[in-house]
Length: 367
Ligand code: DAH
Image 1 (cartoon, rainbow, N blue to C red):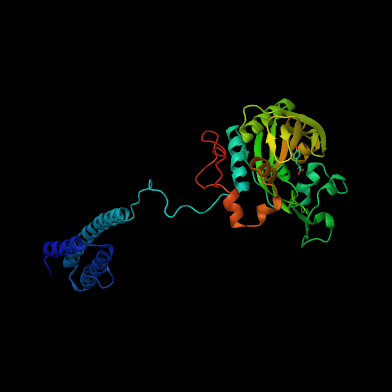
Image 2: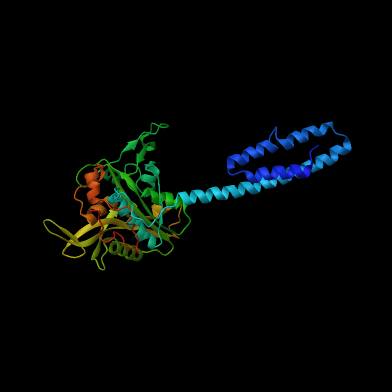
């Protein structure tokens, strides 16, 4: 029988000698593995007398536990060493400029999206989302547009067959506006509500200012005492921040939307000349969004009691805002994936939009 102390010294020395994880694992297998030294010794206990077995068993267990402890400690030491070596090898100076120069550009729609989120985020709005493929309840009915409502004809809808039903009323649509997110939010969000819902929308339309896929942002505020004055203040602050102007003339024209009552369209003051559109002053008006107080039927459809709560909503085209703010004449070019166009109209990826750091970074087009 080997001397336990010598054996312990020998085994611990082997553990200590291991210089990396691989050799440490080899030591572990050689000592504690199925055919390891200690395992073999334990197997031999069977041939001993009861007394010897008891004593030897105990010493072996202590030895085993000492070796395990040493293995664990060594493992941790090696892991730390390996991590430190890796960190040292992968060290980079994050203050160095990018090489080669950054080539990618942020699409104007993404830029406008970020700007709108930054402005409303500052006002305390959350971003809400809904699916591109909608059912007719959320896209139409719940928004006070039952089947055969004339307003449905105003939106050239793409329908998607419902595999479970032949009834046309059950077919799905690709959402014609972001307004269905209003309903989904009312269904799921605790009151009060203050959200914007930016996203893709679809209508069968194609010319210089219309594409079958485009982008809108919806806004919805619902609380017990929300009024039209809040709507006007909120949107006035928005346009000033968005066009980065201290003052901007605005007016609200009475309008009609099935989901709001009263409804209005908001215009901003501008100057239109032959070759230029200057926003913020002048004698002309430019329509930029639709808005109104949420119709009681819409609140009801969203499960909210219109006798207790009221609110306002608004909707605007993100692409149209991009065209106006950055002077891009044809909407169709937005979606042609022409790299030269993107290089001309796109934005540098590191110029983030924020209310404190600058929205468009001084018109920082990557030109
Ligand atoms: N959904 C409307 C459209 O696509 C835009 C709109 C107008 C949304 C008025 C609103 C609103 O929430 O109040 O033309």
